[in-house]
Figure 1: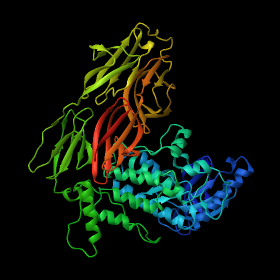
Figure 2: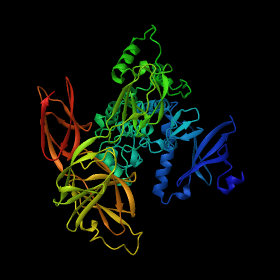
Figure 3: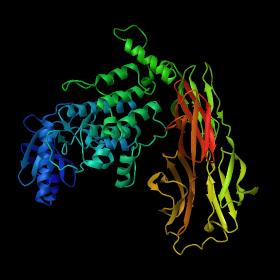
Length: 633
């Protein structure tokens, strides 16, 4: 017990014998203890009264303790941490005795990477959905649903905890408009108005599931203000590469609904959301799917089957098509899965032959029956009839059908050769591409090999521009801004402090979201600057509003400004006949139909797709100005 003395913790709390410290924070500690009457391990949350500065704060935190005890007393669900006792320890303050869950917080499991299988992740989501719906049925809103408030036991079972700021719909301890909760998981109405009901918990649960499945936040940002702005105003980010085992269109549809800005547009319950998500999952066999669905609407006393990890192939196997009592719904489900997934369920599994897949160049993305499975070189199980697709930036995609006895050699990629326009502001600049001078001045057309890297330099009088392009990167109709500081004749002398920061200045017609070396730097507006350390950086510029995405290397020089130029905007008008359809730009819904409606799009190359009642049609265009498309659908 000497360690407890050093930590200023009591040897006993109430009748409980303190064993060790589990965790400590600004407002209190959680200790592991034992109930001597029944020899049961418990966790005890002990509040630090000396950490409370005012009487009002003391009253609020005491009320939270009491509320957590009262709320938890109304709940009886295997997915919710049980509260056993509440009391006060002289000299130490109030305490809560609760169920001890040996395991790890869900947020720590998410941070360490892909340690859970898709089945285990979905099981966690299903049990938590049931737990939240149970609370909502009792008129209780959690208000702080997040991975940090979920414990995952050593048996894989999740437990929702910390109802300290939960709200009963017939009572309130805080004023209207007061924000409680964690910003990254708050709903738009929680942020704007401080108003919460069960639909706010459903939004927060959607954020939790997004992180659980993808390992990413749907609304990332480096500051609280950026995160809150995106939650209220922007759609969730696209997960790249798409999640393995989930249909991309289904994922976007389900996540788009559960994270709707308007509460009335979300799923009615958390279990309705996970049912919808399960419909988009293709990497589940029939028995796995039935097992997960069986966890929904289970009684509070029903035992939870233990999570058992399965191998990649086993999750793909479907039971044999023998006659089973009342089995026709699953025959329909499998038939639909075949229609959507290209027969993946029926043709995968232990009967496949495992082959080494490679390409020249390497690092190509591999898709089997339109499902992403990894990058070359890799080992993959295939059965006759499997359709392979390999994709590599700047190269023509490769398609291949696996046949019995095949042993494919490394797949050779052919580079994409395109005609690009090099333009500058002001025009009339001479161009040097890969150290070779080009004939003519800007604007001029060049043959561009997208399969390799390029170095472009433009000069006119004392003005200049230089940029590196990686494989798959093209000028895309951009107008490169010539700057005086970029030419050898006018380049500034090295600064006295070579470690002084430089800056990146956005030049162009619209705002973009900026990532530098993979770190989200928020929104950058035309003319605004971003301070960076000197040296070479990889930047990513995106605008979901104008369908723009670009990645390029830049070199930042101490005490100097480096320009990041984005293209201008163009108006795209789409019309199809005999009827209209939904218009997608680069696979993203543009919000218009092909009835002669228009949308603003960044200049450059885009894939335009129109989906109508009788089919779809796609066309790749180079947008250098306003353009109208009209074609039969």
